[in-house]
Length: 604
Image (tube, rainbow, N blue to C red; front, side, top):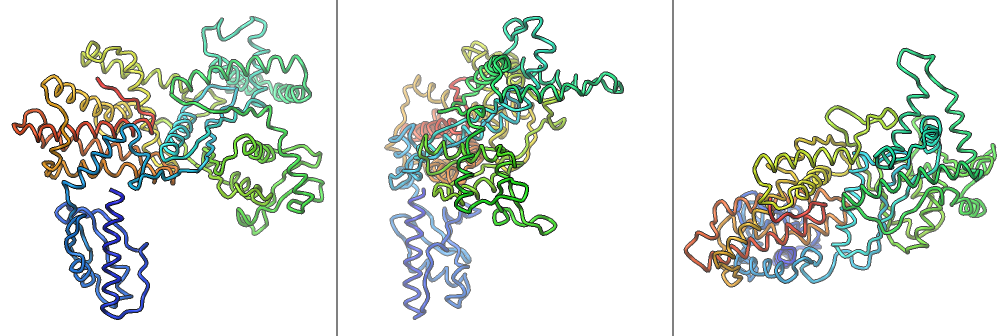
């Protein structure tokens, strides 16, 4: 309906100009102030344009302006214009609008949502790199990673749907003291036994994560038994890191073996959840990058050398003054010339642009790193990279379970694989309790798809910036705003189409003019919003827009189906038109499902 809105807005703008001339008023009409709204009551029409912004210029009440503007427009091909209080409302030509929307859906099929009404793609010509996940190779993926992964993958798909060229990258954090802690625990508790993930029947990432927990427990000792603590292992881990950085052969060999265990395990989880990347970057290969860029910036006067010999930059302009009014300075090279974390990020960003010349880069990272990214983007701009103006931090809030926050070191993290396994088991149980095994075909495969839909949709329906609590039981509900409910709605429409085919009833576009009911029209309008909604979700990097749209479509279809029988109606023309509407609804659901990582099921 986006083009219809623009056509109606143009009529209102033209009428305002005419009214201005009639009254001899010398004002400029700002078309941007002519906003289209949806009236609260369908009886008021389909679109409404408030006249409040023009009251001062016309020196008249908005109610009076609305009456005069509506009278000047009257009835057009797009629909009938009339005044409702301070609004110029439009009652669209339902038959013409429905035919236009549904024929576009039928014609474009899987591509519906990519093209705006004028045939263009909202983000055509944009090259966007998206970094997300960024796991550590000392533990498996957990629930927090699941939110990050869902956001990154969903945003990437939405950007691509809107016409952007997308490159998905993953920075694997595979070096540092935390990695050495797992390595030391392996040497202490497993090496002598020749333990491997295969020998113990574990995924590699789970085994290495177990080592990380074992290190922490050994370091701290048992509660109320201080003599059981081993504080000396902290220094041993630090010594192991020094050996790694010095290229010690034995240390590097152990590191490579355990990194492979973890990385291969993580990739299994990626495959399971439908997450994929175009390129992996490894911190072990990037942690020294950026030093040359800092030296160049020092020579250009962008950075300065502090009294202690370190290289710094004043970032007060980016982050403001401190709580005591002091300027903020960021260390970029320590006094001994070694790099810090942000040095690596500077070098990695530049290397990525050299690898794949993006004009936008999106970092999907928790809100806890807001300060870091403000500083990073500021420094890259100061270094003169024009693409630095298009760097975005897609910050997302914490995700926890109802019983509280997760802690990796204490082994209380909600492992992603275990969580999906649990959701899978509960979904399979629900299928079996309903006696649907034979009907759905491969019940185990369906349970897996239901579990992933439950997880992904629950994580994506909330605006990214908000903290959230993931409730497994709620996520699996087949009623309400959940992934399984949406899958059920898709399966329900598929069932209707199968029954219609068996009854010899075919979808018929020629009877669209018969779709005059309130519920039919509401569903048609909702389907017509999809292309502009995809564009809005892409611009705002917010998958919750698509998720909530899916629920709106499902509710609209449910109301339509309750009030508008398809196969039992005597008028075959009307039956075919309603089936055509159902078929178009399924197309939109499938297209939107893919954007929020919900797999379509034709039977449930």
